Image (cartoon, rainbow, N blue to C red; front, side, top):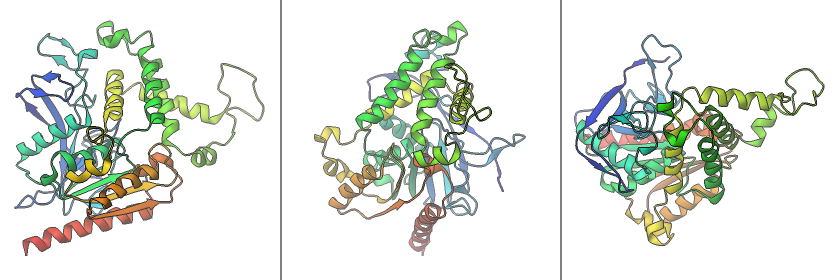
Length: 379
């Protein structure tokens, strides 16, 4: 059963210098919390979101039955990340279109909507602002930081940027950087948006336009990479949309998979911002903690002091188990404490969002151990 939650906003008036050199004179972050912070503030867990998610991790909003959080199967009372025992925080990243300051907001310096003028943000910038928000909440150390996909990159970055503030890092279906193939997928998606006639160099708000065609294609392409071949075949196969014969049309929908992808694209372009898509995929591209160490991941991860849980899925070809094993090997080389689970699941990259008994059990067991350690430290 879901529970009612309420989004919150925290404003920051201190200038924020970004990794790109850009500066935000002021900004605000949308966030939500679940559960109760204990007396010594030792039970805080930060959940980092992926590309098209937000601070709304779990629960529902009042008078809105269709507003269930994006990870409600993972976080909540009695769930693997149990809010009966943990104080969970979800923060919407800068540049997003779900509440925190981003391209859709007004630039105080010009009085106009930022649009394409919103500065480039990185994973490291997101982690920095999350840390500033936690400072305001009086939380000096996290029992755990956790995320899947791009959220997993943030969890990894937390362990490197603020090693003394993280006791456990849970990195799911993620990677220490993107492969050339992944960057290529992101670039094709961005070009679809940028070349849409309604994009107007990123200032489409002023034209009362939305680059829907580009967003549709970007989402369709992305969705293909989130699913495994097995899932697409089992759900759609070669099923035809109408009847049992081909229409021999170059324009009409012939196959069910085409219909499904168009539906996903149509839905996405009605709620997601085009400039946000460009910003977030670029942040994905730029993330590479080993870069300043000549590509040596072992040296890069030497900063981390947290214990780790790393989880991958066998059919995830976008963030393959091989990429998770790279992180595991580098952590082992640094003699860090870690657990690794490679789940044989058919769902592709989306598996980190779905129910799988083995996956849920791994996470639940890990967080029970965190809970026991918190209790033991109080004794």
